[in-house]
Image (tube, rainbow, N blue to C red; front, side, top):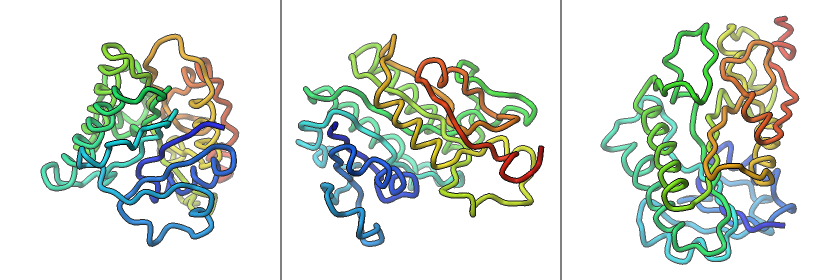
Length: 248
C-alpha cells in the first residue's frame, strides 16, 4: 500500500480513480471544494481543501507522499488564457514540481496531459507521443507546457514522471454516443482502461526518469498510438468503442 496524493480529486477522473484506488492505497485527496464529492468516498481517505495555485498551500503537503496523481487543471478548450488557464494549468504544476524537490519520499509524479496537445493533426493520422506536439487550442498548449515542465524536472532535477495524453474519457457506457462518428470512437478511453493504466503507472519500472504515453482504449482504429504504453508500462486495455457501438 502506497501513500498517493491526488490533486483535482473531485473531478470526473479523480472521483473514479478514488473509487478504484481506495482500499488499495493510502489516499490524500486535494481540491478546493468537496461539497459535491460522494460521501462514501470521503470515508477512509484524507481530505484537504486548499487552493494549490498558492505556493504556500504545498507546505508539508508532500510529506510522506510516495506518488502524486496530478489532475488539477482547467480542461475547458475555450478557457481564457489569462483568467482561467495561467493559474491552474501553469502556476499550479510549477508549484508541484518546485515542492517535489523537497519531498524525500516521493517516487513518481503521474500527470494528466491531453489529446488536445496533439489533436490538430489531420483526422486520418495516428499520433505518436514522439511526434511534434500540435495542440488544437490554448488548453492543449498548456498540456504541452506540463509535458515540457515534467521532462525538465525529470532529466535535470531527478523528479520521475509519467504523463498520459488522455483521450475521450467516458465514465461508463451510458456516455457513449450511438451516433458517434469514426473520430469520436477512435479517441474513446474507458474508465476501466484508465484505472488499469494508472495501476501500471504506479507499478512499472522506468528505464528513464520521464515517460509520455497516450491514453485511449483498445479501439479498432485508434486515433493515438498506444504501443509505448503497452511495451513500457504493460498496459493491456480491454474496451473498444467500435465493438461497443457495433460499428465494426
